[in-house]
Image 1 (tube, rainbow, N blue to C red):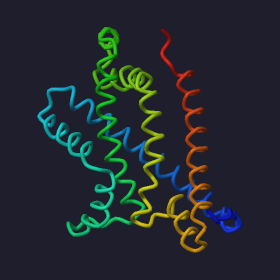
Image 2: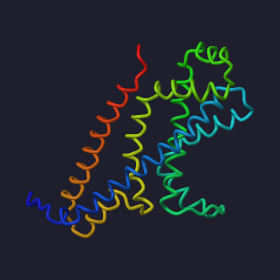
Image 3: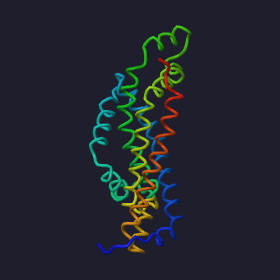
Image 4: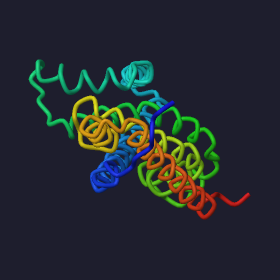
Length: 219
């Protein structure tokens, strides 16, 4: 094999990779925050006797069983045909948030079942309304129970941001492909991009594990 490694072209545009990494983290953070809100609403609907329960179940089933790339392409290219026109950034965040919300709905539904019913009864005994009990007692306990799954979902969403390159959102994979196309240094470009992803995921996992330990419910 006569290939000689030369990282000069990649180092010259390393600022682009850093900018792409920042965009990827921003996309993942926005999507997990919106996804948590969607997941919470869906989890409460799914565990209630609300007439909206079949709709919530259909949403979870559809978005969990549709490939994320298909959702992204549908949101960006098909929604304008239905009169809903979003920018590529907003379009990707919407697709990723809806995808995350469907998965988190199931996570939160499981966490809700783990909340001791005695906590709600205690809230009622001291005169709290059902809304106050949910907001001040049930949701905080449920979120702490679901922290490990939330952490895994956030890491997964960060890696999924690489799919944003399909609609030209300027994140890490988009810039790596740009550098590769302009420099023809295939191995060097994707090796550095992979290191960016792996190092970021390892760092995020360490930080999230630390947060889990600090916020874990004492046994």
